[in-house]
Length: 220
Ligand SMILES: [Zn+2]
Image (cartoon, rainbow, N blue to C red; front, side, top):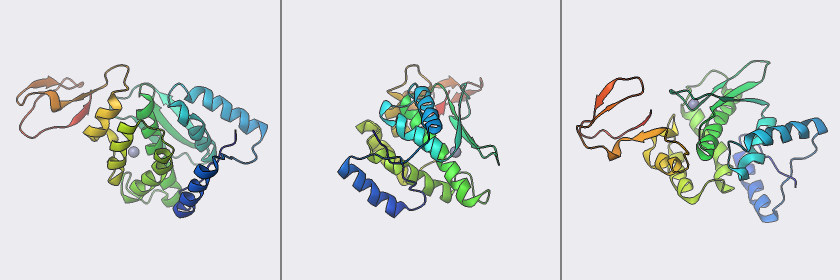
């Protein structure tokens, strides 16, 4: 099977047009790739199928090749789901926590990819989660949503979230509730279910009392 990878970031309008064509023809083309790159792609797919929805594995593997990214699967970091480091001359590094469920992993991958696209366009002259990143995050997420890589409930909340994406999708309670359903073990705790005045401990052992109006998601 051939697969098309379109760099939507270079021409969103052309990208949207070509995407319609792909969906109409059901033809997926990468173009000519060497045996070496084909081998690299197979190796990537073998790893990524453990972390991503199967339907997204080939697309994401080709994005990694297209953008010459180094993907690091990391042990869990309490303060982040993933991160991005531009390494001049050494490839650009995306890291993602190993214990995210497949849909959390996919959203985080696209989030970090948007950092790379923003870096390529603007260098260091932008806010990390400012307007340029938000725009690129939307552009990078668009084909992923259109190709139906997410279950309908996540897709619904993700589309809403993408109207004004936050620096972390874990701050969007409705989106996270739909994503958390696919967790094998509990990583997030949503305060909606607690009574006002309830005491709880953060993972850094600080005690918090829930007061009126506070409803937030914490990674604990
Ligand atoms: Zn970020």
